[in-house]
Length: 184
Image (cartoon, rainbow, N blue to C red; front, top):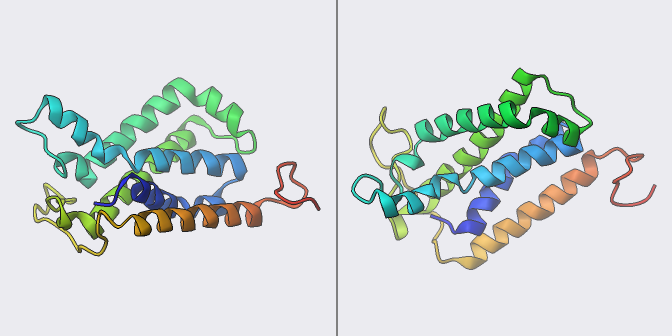
């Protein structure tokens, strides 16, 4: 399991295509959803305090099933409660209700799946490996490619992802845009 910085970096990695799919604010909204969701599966660290008999770290919240259900719930809530505010903030893209639901659901799903991917690459060193395809495939998966305490990997990867997002924001923003990083 990578640390928080590493999970955010994986969320940023999985959200990179947003710069090619939407305009600036929509891309940023998608990326923010993915980054928040990249931390979601670790909610089990909090839930296990109250439900320690049934919930443990790298358990049910680290499955594609739960991440998908949570993404649908988040997409429904954001669309139902904040569709006007999201549409007003994004400005450049106009979403109808169904496309906003898909946008928010996929944004959260991308981030949640990035977390599972990061834990597959790093989980077995200090924690139990995850079973991401439970209940269909209840076998643990773990590659143990990244050591949890390797701060240079987590911070280095995060730094690379931030630079990649800045570069893509610059490259995909039209020259005449008012938020262009460099003048014409």
